Image 1: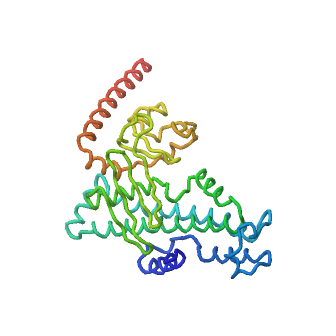
Image 2: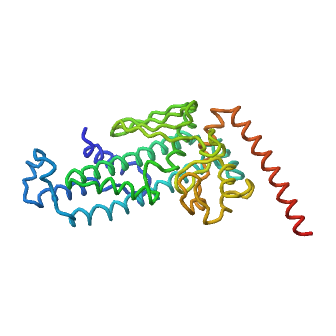
Image 3: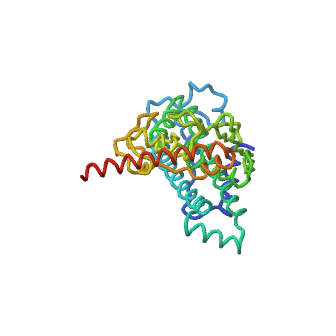
Length: 327
């Protein structure tokens, strides 16, 4: 099945069980029609276009028809999809990793209703949602470059990366994959969708989670902290997307562990990419931490003991300095 047909079928099925009225998606079918219109802008016969070399396609320096429709709309659609995906995943995981009184209420609810299967189904729906839209975005940009003999589509991907709205490089997708593996209680999870099957795999020896998409695209998310060069423990994802242990990230920002990443100076930068202001919206990867806790029990316990010792040491030094200052 061609992707255009699969995406149309996916959207039709999506309307039956998908999420809510706020959902957004890539306007793949409409943008494809815009590209077909652009093919005829030089007077070429559209039906014969596929037989012509790329050099005979639209060669105008700027293509107002496409540029106006594509890059302004695509950046908005991608941004809206990323925001929607983030809000839905946060809401889903909030029920799974609730703490305090909320954990008690969730546990009480399970006595009357077992909704674990429903949560897993929602996770599968969200994974397919973000993956299908990411594939649609990638394919339409590829078609754009083919029609215009340009690299603007590739450059647009770089712009998305700079603005932190890459759909398949979101820490929330890693969290969702960890949630799915936690729900299945295995190191591999298969998800069957309209366009084919997706799979998440945890590789403990290489410290990575792998996502395989239906069109044989393989994405690997490294779970190694770039500072301590070990499995991330109590992981946080900075706004730029890089993962670090909480203690390592605090150390890089000249913070004590008990202060937390939110206390970081707004000018603090990422230890890897050096981008500024990435600490303010750091994501605490609770599902990933739970996954490592259950799969690497001895390692997790050892790191927990080390972090507690370091936190006690830092707290003593902090209050000692505060007392000396007060005196």
